[in-house]
Image 1 (cartoon, one colour):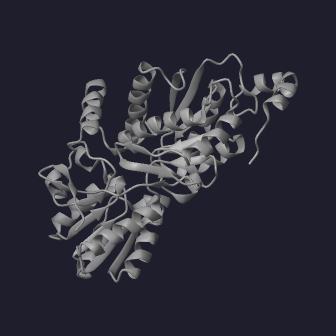
Image 2 (cartoon, helix red, strand yellow; image 1 turned 180 degrees about the vertical axis):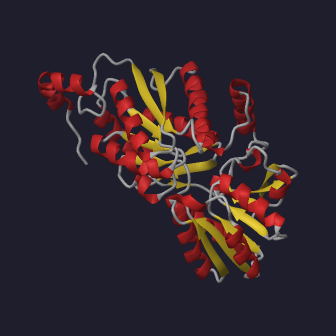
Image 3 (spheres, rainbow, N blue to C red; image 1 turned 30 degrees about the vertical axis):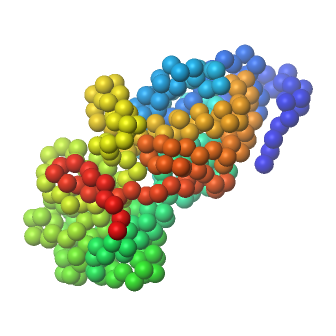
Length: 391
């Protein structure tokens, strides 16, 4: 781990002035003695197919930033916040990162989706910039020591799903429909299969689709039906899940359905008959109708500010900002420090804190950047999410 000493940084300052001006100063090894605010950036899709996720993250961060600033900021310094749209595209995400560097970003909360995050973490690693993703689940998204995540990883989701199904005896025969062209889906699928076999679950069908064939699922549904599956595991996003549920209904296939966190947003799909999701179970760290005071306050404030009910991505992002504040205060960082020195301090302090958030209690992090927290499973009941208690 490279740590630049402050004295050495000051000696190099005059030699670096020109090059810093040319690149905008982001990600540099030099601090800015005149800086009086923390500049925190965010990246995610606010347009395109995954806009519901990025918009939720953008709003969740903004709500937390406003609250933190009103309460005195971080170590007495206010936060400046800027969010860039990447349309869930890797090239656009890297471009967004460079835009934020030119703005002077010191820490990144993002990216929102997995594939762009894998691309961007290469950049943050090269710059030694602290990165904290609320929702990118693939293992490679935080493969370096400067990166942490708020959500479960893909392998964790697959393992936890198989364990929950086995522990609660939800099915004797399981079919899987997954997206073989998507790292999120395939990562969860692979870990689910491994854990299911270890737990003695019988997988009777595993049917793939790709991004080029993600509207007609008649073949996959028929094979799952013919296999005698009484539960279908869907490690996919809500857009495809809405089509699968509707098409399965048309052929009279009504198994139990079990999904993962990408399922959040299903009930908001325009034109989707929400009754088809009744009984669907999925992993999620957050449900807006939870009765604890913190959740109800967050939901009320979010709805008042943005006119919409928050989904888990908003809650993950909101938690990210409060975790970042806790870690920054543990590390006693200040805005005049270099991006690299801030990152090194945050890497250490992230492994020293434990927080209670909207998305879990007593959450802590290891040096690998992975969170330790209890999973939550919800079921769609009467058009809303209800937390299931494991037996």
